[in-house]
Each structure stands twice: as structure tokens, then as C-alpha cells.
Image (cartoon, rainbow, N blue to C red; front, side, top):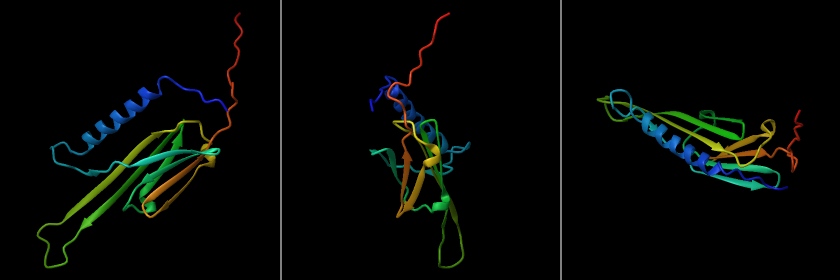
Length: 147
């Protein structure tokens, strides 16, 4: 199968990276300027296997129930959120802090995928998402007649 290249893919990747960085900066602080939550960047690998795209994402410390996935229009979105309690075992609390951690990553997939055939597994802090490639004709262009 012949791979098509889009000259704008590099720009799209740049804008996604910039968007993630601005998103992280803006969400770290609430309106008073106090840090509101801790955000973590997810490390990912995207690999091309025979007939499928496999995305491997590091999400240590999260439970499976803390993670949500969605895929649409060649874009995989991963959201993870958890509440952490910092407790002191000795004596009465003079101060107790709750911490909210969240992570979000939007990943542009290199090819069209079959969203209905997607599957995912989470083991030892590593999320693996398998997305079957959608069959595309080598030349799916259509001739348009001119009146």
C-alpha cells in the first residue's frame, strides 16, 4: 500500500505540542495564582504493526478506572484523573492536603483506523491501545466531471 504524505503533518504536530504546553501552564494555577493541581505528561510510543497501530502510554500510579480513552478522526485522546490523600499516621492533623492529579494527551494517528475494532489493556502502569488500520484503496480519489 502506498503511503500518502501530508505536507501539513509537521505543522499539526507542532501545534499539538504547543497546545499541550499552553494547556499545562494554564491549568497548573487557579485564579488566585495558587497551584490548583498537578499535571503529568504521558510518555508514549506509537508503532506500526502488521495491519494495526499500537500506542503504548506510561501511566504509573493510576487505576484502570481512572483512565478514559476515545478515538475519532485519526485522533486518540487519553484522560487520567486521580485523587491522592497525604495522611499522617501520628497524632492529630494540623494540616491535611489532598492532591488532584490529571493527565491528558491527544495523539494524532498516522493512518485511519477502525474505531470499532480498538482495544486496550492496562498492566503495571502501562496502557496499550491497539487500533486496527482501516482498509483504504491505494487511489481513493474520485473523478469529478465538469459541466
